Length: 226
Image (cartoon, rainbow, N blue to C red):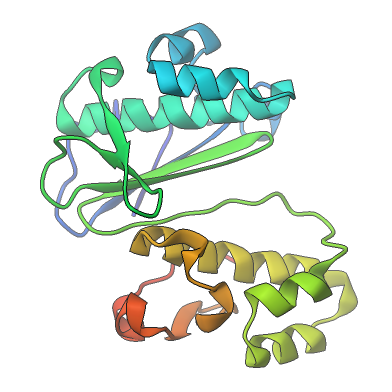
């Protein structure tokens, strides 16, 4: 996996091999001081490369922070995919899969991408294999016990219950981001209940058990730095 300073892929012109993942994480103007080495497209440039559907979605956000994160993520994905496919970012067209995953129209065979945005931070990844990612701000999840019933399998809930109270929200969010990333990569999203997917969210994250719709557990590789 290669982490890029900016989504233009200025430091390379193509993916080096079929197993490589390129990853860009950026900050909006609200959190840029926290990520001084990360470059994010300017607002004017970012807006100029969105299509009409993306522009419409952008205007529907009420809070400026959410607008900026959406804008950076979608412009960033266009710049990254444009560099990989050697096409102008503003000419790229997207459609939705059966379960809502964005797909690049006329993409090279097997090229996949995933985007995620939260207030203040965005991330984009691309590879010639199914890929998914998710980012979440660290925060107190006050309803984590109720959410755990929906998100976690019984054995995962037992592990979470043994986690010190001060770290329970962080550990729950780690479960959440790992599971959402896998469901995104599979292209099914939350049409598949996340509590049917069992993962190790520890220092060596892995898929332990997966429902039939996701195939064998051993085919999934999880990258989730501690």
